Image 1 (cartoon, rainbow, N blue to C red):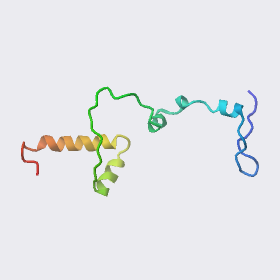
Image 2: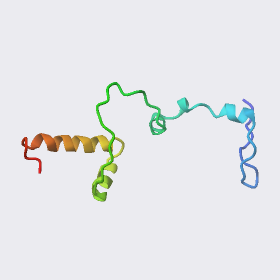
Image 3: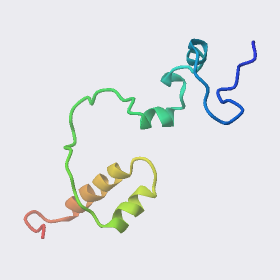
Image 4: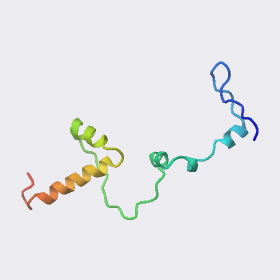
Length: 93
């Protein structure tokens, strides 16, 4: 395997890229799954089950849910679903 030329010059600036450099970078498919998800690599939704809305929540609520990691918005949805189940019909106040 031939030695690759550094992408930066001795002064720290990025040198002009050659076709060989770009070919060696690989595709997005070679990235870790967690990074691919963040890039929006996702198939179509089978059946629209959720509605996109804008909602204003307390900062502390958002921070606590975000701190739980990926899927925090789904956990907010689950918490609201649980709250709805506990409410009696007609008494949501």
